[in-house]
Length: 165
Image (cartoon, rainbow, N blue to C red):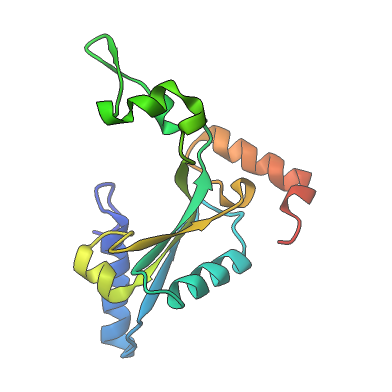
């Protein structure tokens, strides 16, 4: 039932936490979701991320990578055969002035950590006040496509890119 296509990750996480609580009588304050599609993240990344969260007043932490495109403000959609901007007019200055683009990030590294009570309350992987854990692109790459897989294979073959693993 939890392995079906429509099931979301947080449902699986909450099921696992409930199972451990019920069957092992263990209750956790924090939990980390480590997605298997990010095989290059390190134990050090995980330890640093969790330590950073526990030492803070944040509810959750998410691994982030620098966005691969210059900025999400350059994104365009096609709707009814017409190019449209995805952002409101208030972002017009960003769209027309690349120097003003704020740094942009994407989720990566398959690291989602949070307070268990926040996961339960909000039922998502980034509940409450979320803090970033900025990762190196190579260690944080997430395999979602054949091209991602080939890139990870090449990085592993290169070896020295992953120095410090």
